[in-house]
Amino acid sequence: MSEFTLRIDGMHCGSCVRRVSQALASTQGVTVKEVRIGAARVESNQQTAAIDNAISSLSRAGYAAHLDSSGDASPTGN
Image (cartoon, rainbow, N blue to C red; front, side, top):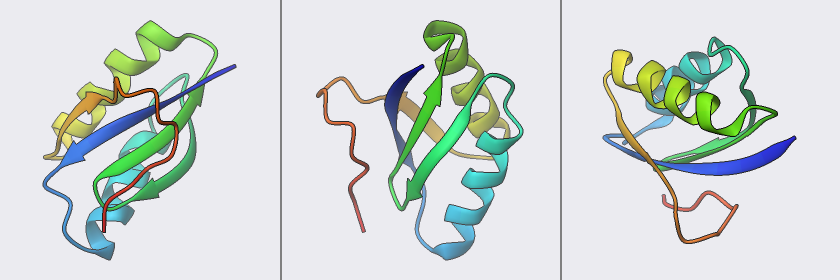
């Protein structure tokens, strides 16, 4: 399994965290490790497909997301 962090725009409150968590939890091939305002840490055994699927799920939920390329596996933002 590999772990990666997604940076997520448009999250402002606990309700956003819940919606993002639900969107990611319903994404095939993705296990949610942690969601905070502005970021989510997820795990998958199919990294490339999982990233695309997770970003698509978040887009359908109304959030813009991108892979964190900084190498930091810890979600930040508050």
